[in-house]
Image (cartoon, rainbow, N blue to C red):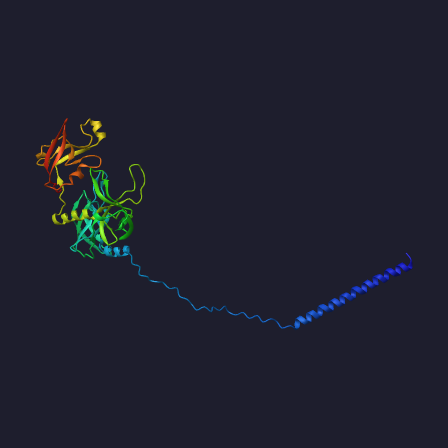
Length: 382
């Protein structure tokens, strides 16, 4: 390499160094000036103020609106007259010894200011002692005036306070679809519970399984539970139109049903209660026989000469049946103009008459069919 080339390289290096130094000095000066200017600026004022709510304080208000409907008005009328019925069933002797007392409960309602109460027979059946609980929780003693098994009506009486009376309506004019209210004490604990529904149908019959039907019942979908028995079924005028008595939930086929409640028409309950108050019992017509119902299946098994009717197993002495000449082994197939069949039981057909009424029985004796005149008596009271 010549000396000229070496000198040229040294000159380039020197120029580059001077340029770098000049750039550094210039850049530093610019940065320094910028820092000086920022230091001279005033700091921003940052004042933290408390949050202020310009909206005035508000108070949540509860509105009281007096809502009156036909339902609430009806409940106000009838509710104070409704009572809870509590009965004591004495213990019984079994093969395992004496059982303890049992408490049963149902519902009832005042019908007179002298303390008479309507309830169901099955509520107080077999009880040794009965108390009532008023709608305000007051307890009073009550006595059983009389009962009628076949209508499932019982009348109680208390000498205590009568807070209100239930007004009785006319169940004969009830129509399907009409709104009704059930008031009662389900399970014995939930006193004066109110449920609402409609009249689903009228004129229903329920087979008791004891040789007779409870007839002319009001069907309703108002909820009726254990403990509601004997309570009032009320229309929207605040009138009692029925006495709640039973609910069907299961059928023989195993089907489960809902909303199948039944009530005794108040016209029936009033007639029975009136006679119980006057006599201490309800008079039923009496023929004086023990019998076995006959249907086509039984008739086929025993080769009987009639497919429907009642087979007389015993004739009571000094009874209307005995005086009319009926005998053991006779089969009654018709009472008056009503044939005994699947829809007309013996008991219910006889109950269409009054004690002292005369009627004609169609009787099959062996291979002979005869007409027998009979005057019905009055059923003896147990």
